[in-house]
Image (cartoon, rainbow, N blue to C red):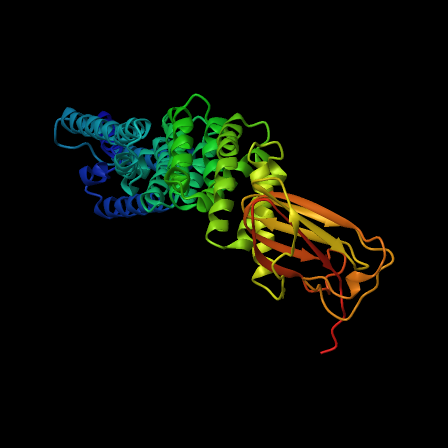
Length: 474
């Protein structure tokens, strides 16, 4: 009986290895094959159903199956006759086999943990390409039977690293919004404290790269908004410290016409910077750029208007100079601007449909070096006189209350209408001698054709002419 007990203990110990060795010892071939099949099915199921995700279920299942084999080995071994061999041999073999299996299991279970630790170290260093390799090794299907939580932790680390790798791929293709969104997802995944501590700095760097891209190809507003977001979102970071210099570079890059003295394009360059102050109120960075543009605009605006005037682009010149006069009424050049606007008005009228204004009629003498021009109004409409030459200016003559419209348009010399014996309004303009362009028109009635002419005013001469309005029927 003692022999049978020893035989049962040896078979139980051999079966404790999980390899069915006790059945082989008892020469129960069918049971050995059956135990292998069940064990294989359990292993395949564990591998396919992610056993490491529910370890206690599978540990319990395998423990019950192992306990069954141990009990079965003891039962069948104890029921048979004692073996002829010394009982210590199978017991020693069983103990050795069990020790070997336990040692292998310990080493096998440590594999995923080692791979996880290597992956985490690479992840923390920002080397996600290497980290993913280690995470893949940790989560290999063969490791499911370790029932280790390292597999799920490795899968989580791999998912985080893949977000980083996808974001870096987007950055490599200059898809900065995609890269920024990727890093935003990565930080959100770990509530702002990811395994890689440098992720936030990398995100700030991507914002800077995006702003640089917009500075090269986008609008001033878009580039500025991208730059301004960096110190607001990442205070104290190296990219935030670089923003002021980048904004200086943006201004220089977008005001090349200003630097080159190309005035009209310079005005267009400055306008986006002026608008920054309105779009970003109480933002000192925006105010600095807008202030630089404000300082440069008066000179550029004035020079642009004068350039357009000299090049006979009168409509553009008028628009620009009127803006200058509106924005800078106290500027020392405002008088010159007013004169130029009068000259533009005369030039535009002269290039349109006008009557010919005859040379003025000498009527006496004037102080040396000067000429006087007397305009007599014999019409029921007020007259406006515009002139430009050595001096530029305007004058007006009130409407003649007792005068009527005749049968001609702004006759340039005294006619029968002007001989009426009534007191007519007059104005006298005193000018240096020289060549002048004159326009006479009726500002209150646009249907009356203006008259235009070029006059040579001689020194010491007084001129006088009477003007009246006459309706034309042909």
